[in-house]
Image (cartoon, rainbow, N blue to C red):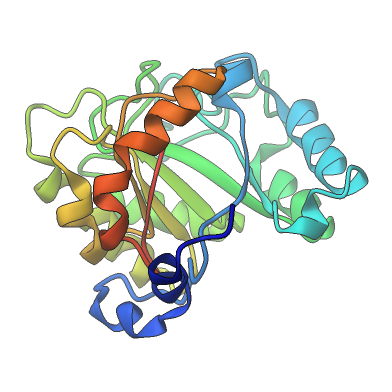
Length: 235
């Protein structure tokens, strides 16, 4: 069904963009692409991500705007390196993330990565809390285009305090990196995240069923007016 007139106005009214503190030139329309978690969970590797990029192109999805290939949790090694840096898991991503980003970019696509606004990710890999500047600079050096930033092991620090430091760190790199807040909708991020990220989770995890999809769509009705170019509700 066609979008209501009011929704179309929100979608194309870029005056909304000026209210965003992030203001990184991204997310003028909602992001589209693929994320590894829902089907593969921790069972990911370099080959899978490359094959997915190939598939987005060969199926025609890339031409329709599905241009993000996003790696979720478990890409990193279980501890930081000697200099405190994040490291790709040497068994599953032996060529490193920069090489993978180069491959994805060569397909005309963009690469996303995952971290956590806590001391550990949900699968107990190193989180980025208190490492925001170093990790953002590392992601930028690899050519990352998108960051999904999760909410596990957060030490009880409110999300309004934990998420802005990564916004500032990403902006300081000089690279345009889409910033996706994944705080599960616990603190009604639609009310405040427009000043922090390009998108924000408003619900719990989506499941691979139509009911899950439609339930999430229904729950997002009340947040529709808070979304627009530069910042979107999502899951």
